[in-house]
Length: 396
Image (cartoon, rainbow, N blue to C red; front, side, top):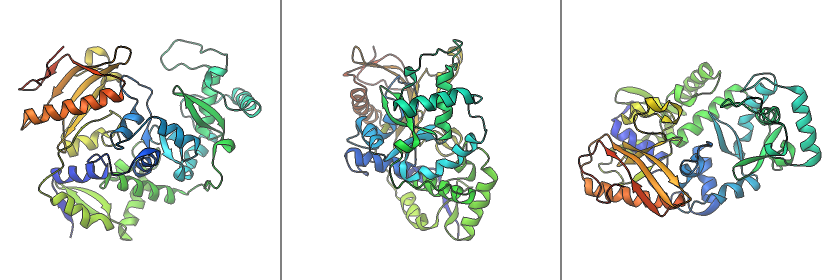
């Protein structure tokens, strides 16, 4: 018999699986950060630093004692690596082999961002092989235009070699990649067997369900070029084999690991939910697939830094607000680290808050924690909309 879940029950299950209900489930220290990355299967990296960078923010929300130093420790120890998931990400080194199919496609001629320049890549490889790890700034050539995505020939070649897997990020210095040869970065004993398509799809299904509990084929193959049909076939086979099972959420089909079905039903059936409030990164694993978020949370979300200023409704860098298993608002934030002020340029609530005093108390507490993580000791609130009651801590 197929289990049927309400949207509310599904949200509890998904957030529980995303480990947003507790910052203590992975333990403490760098080992906890590694467990979080392994559980989620990837943590997205983004260059924007309006507030804490995406990968730091995502882990901070799940690991009580998280420190940015953990990433450097794990990278130097060969326990994580950087590569493309659906975007540039930090991935567990134990999953390295599942990045190989993409590396091999690009090495065989598939274009990622820019056309390959064999002469430039040969020159870059020679320098790194002879001189050791290098940063992009160690190369003196300049980009040929001032266009937003323009890069120097050496930077294009470095990224091409990175995407081919010839180079890896050995570590970062002030967020700048330090490139080195793959053989000098990979830890001994690392599994480098290239998986076939069936193995890759099965890995992706299991990893997705570990992190999200329930899913659909399009969600598992999200931005995975060329895997759509193969993913549907593998999911059908896994269901026939009894490894996964179908359930419904508000009448729509999803699937989950069969061994987890009974446990998910119990989580969904609980009458109460944890009273947690989280301020999420726009690139957090729980909200990165906007269509999924819209279906499960009735929350229309877009990070507006990628649209023109005239078209922004809420602000440049809006962070989703998660409270009591609902995404009920967003805040446009900016950390002014020089003067220690965390600016809330716009706080917008779009769903009713049953107990406004309790909500604002929890929000203020979480904002203070997040501001401190961003190097700020003051909060300045500039604008509030969509709320019947203003927070007691007032506006700037």
